[in-house]
Length: 638
Ligand SMILES: *[C@@H]1O[C@H](CO)[C@@H](O)[C@H](O)[C@H]1NC(C)=O
Ligand SMILES: *[C@@H]1O[C@H](CO)[C@@H](O)[C@H](O)[C@H]1NC(C)=O
Ligand SMILES: *[C@@H]1O[C@H](CO)[C@@H](O)[C@H](O)[C@H]1NC(C)=O
Ligand SMILES: *[C@@H]1O[C@H](CO)[C@@H](O)[C@H](O)[C@H]1NC(C)=O
Ligand SMILES: *[C@@H]1O[C@H](CO)[C@@H](O)[C@H](O)[C@H]1NC(C)=O
Image 1: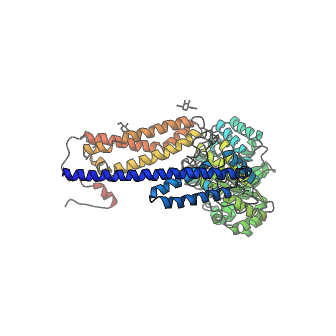
Image 2 (image 1 turned 60 degrees about the vertical axis):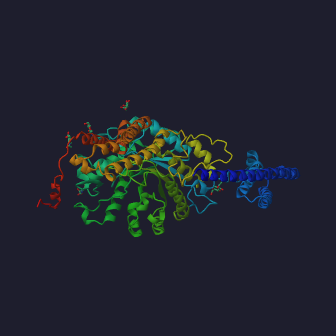
Image 3 (image 1 turned 45 degrees about the horizontal axis):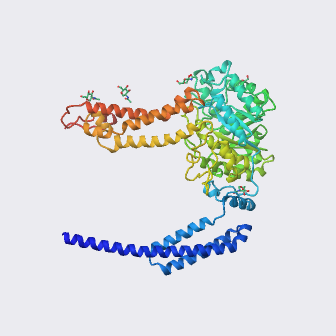
């Protein structure tokens, strides 16, 4: 045994020495070669210096380096049998090559003369969707309006003003305010205001602020569908279209129009000099169902009501231009639209928030609109469009939606007599009055700025880098030799990674969304493993108080960490939202997003205590499940 072992050792040692010797030889060869190359290079460089200094020509550099590389490879092939040596030499070539690269200043100087600013940050690298077909002549909508949906998470006045100001700097020309129940209604409409509605003075402060910034302010009030905020109350239930549903107003009752008249009066009184009033009229899901309406065609009902509301607006203020959402018009024929002279009374706002605009509004619909209306508005989205329960917008998808809109507008504008008025970037806070909150403003501010810059330039690419980063108070990029792209929307569509160091108002919450994302995944995984995948803490174990304490201990080891992680998240949410929202909103958001996990985790904690308190267990079998009978499934005892 020993003899054998030492033989092996000897032979290993021998091989090692031989290897060392070989290696030393090749290292010496290598050094000699490197010295030769450095010599040759120096001569070459002295020769070339004048030219190199005069003009840095990348192609020549490349050719020069290539020739050295080829020589090296050939030399290496001849001199060394070892693959390693080859690699080493190639590495040295790379190092030499790097040493010979033009300096940063030279790169900058060269780039300026070439007019290719930071060519390494291509649209593709940044993950910017390629959709603009008319690159030469970008279409810039005359108006870029930011939509404030106040039916959920109304910002404090302070935050409202901050966002307005940031929007203005990023190219916004106006704001569309959808007050819903945040408006300080008075008189018979007083019950419509939420208990945390803005005060009259607060609304005036916002309007004054917007006016100072020379922003167009368009108020929006729903007057047909989406009347939940009013029709949910008993005192307004009599003007519902369907008695059991608060979604839509009955257009055929005089009291409905009296109600709308008062609504319009109060809104316009607070907006005495407004040029526009948006009267909603989207998604009227319930129409033609009540006794009076039943005899009428849906499209007639719809158009007649729009006419009536427009008339009420003009009676109050003839100078106001009325705007409606377009979706209810999409399937009404050109003849019908013309016979109601709808084009003389309202302007449509064509909304599509998905990427593919033409899938929802086909060219034939555009032709129809152009035949009826002299002009139109469009509406994209920067948040609140890709899922009712999202907490962070996918900026890439929203950018694609906005860029596609620019393309569609550029194509369609010529068919309208007066082109398009502009685009509204919607930012939904809930999908309707009864839905939970979707993405909050601080989580969506980067998406808003991105899309405002895109719509106010007609495109988005690296040329807006500085504007984008400074709008969001991001630190200047450090002087890397090779700067990393400032966006990579493909791999980082929420921009968490790229904007991790930015200090825009609300950034703490924006960053918290990343933690939420991770915590949520962790909690889901934990709950699934503990109560579904493993076999000792399922609903069955809990119900029958029947488990092995040892296993329960094992399954709850990670529980305190996950549970306290969630609690900390909720605590930090309170801190990060404190300045931007009222306590109702903060509480609502936590209750919807974080609290369910806190509860479920606590339930497991409680269950583990119960299961571990059992000292003696009953004989199997456990009782037959009697509850099955309720579902018509009978399992008897015999
Ligand atoms: C950015 O886009 C505009 C408009 O298409 C174009 O003129 C410009 O050359 C682009 N710049 C870069 C660096 O891609
Ligand atoms: C509405 O009022 C008008 C005139 O005041 C009246 O003629 C009409 O019958 C009323 N309609 C309904 C549905 O009550
Ligand atoms: C909201 O809650 C915080 C924390 O409890 C409290 O300090 C603050 O006064 C509350 N704000 C209002 C307006 O009640
Ligand atoms: C867990 O137990 C505590 C203390 O008994 C109780 O207050 C709490 O409601 C329980 N939690 C759940 C989710 O059942
Ligand atoms: C489970 O068993 C323990 C110990 O016998 C008892 O204290 C507890 O009430 C039981 N819980 C349930 C849900 O049956």
